Image (cartoon, rainbow, N blue to C red; front, top):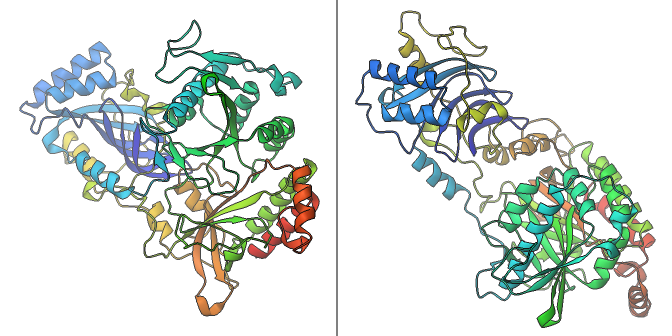
Length: 576
């Protein structure tokens, strides 16, 4: 399903076009997510170029469809066979009347042109290396996808249980064998035999629901027809990263010690993420292990959200710890390079209120990490420069003939008629819905309808136009909340129902050295990562040995209390 048009606060609002997998399409107006006013239904793939039928025959087809109580898809096919389209009038989703009109009298969008423009507009460089047959990780990917599909389906088919201590106990999780030929409870598959372990599945079900993660969409992103991509490891841990084709999810391999730590802190993590909607800690969705008996290989994985899930290009990426020892990049800098603390040569001003909210949430998150004796975490920061000549990809996707741009939203219940069931409203109702256009009473009914649906649709504000609009600022260069091109507006145009701390944050980047340039409008994406390093004996030894040759305040290996305070102080200097 696809919606091409204007919307507001996560719902269709104004003119637009909705299309379904069946081929049905509707061009009209929406109000608060419901059809409102006059619009036209048609079948783009099946409609002939000219009608070849007269109105009387069309009327017979319409009466036949009404008598049969046909579904919308059947009605559209009958109308298409006669060279007709179906014009309907709605009032807040309620059908008022229906007429069948020859297609050659109604201007309709060119869908081929629409899709070709859309494909070109959103083209951007993909991260990583696609895992295809013959790739070193191909077999592992097949095992991982099958295991996740099996685990999520199984836990969702059962009742949702209130959580207790047993649900957090990883020792109670059983290992399941997946032979290649299949078994009584596992399907056959194309990979090698493997054993699969799904840790604390009921806990992750609760968390996925808390994060508003639909299980079907989750499995489609990770386990669908499209392959995962393998990313080069940006850190020293040696972990392997996979990213879903839609870049919503990252899958990270883990050391045994990291899995043990996550299992131990899972009750605290669950409680924290349940209470703190705007937590900057990574959103985790599942914890798994693959055991290859024939290779004596065990691989542990955690599934997490991608901080940079956006169509906008990240012109700069930073991994910020608040330390200085070894925190300077020496290799040539590209847009994909992960920069460090000493590479950052500017500060950022968020809109009034957002800085205080950010620092307050950082304090809450860091307090938890300090209590859990966790350190060496980072703030992953992505910067999109709104005035960059290489620019962000054109996320606006214009339609043919000046039609509205795309905003991808799910169809509401009132649009289900495209696939099943007739609206069942009485024919010939003449009342006019609020917001519909008035026409001359001298025109025939058909002429009135054609005139209403033929009016050009004006192009509204879109993500692309907003991104390139100068931000309203206060005298102190701070973005003004609620004004044009604000965090709130960009979040809504990005398809988010509400503003989330760390996503689409409008800010002003101010160079530390005024000679190097003027303040620039930016959009920031950030979140805390790498929260599975405990201040254990190895880190204590590292701290003691490095203390002999460098200052304690500059190194990363310090106790969690010192690390937390230094980390927060550094963020206060960055977000001014």
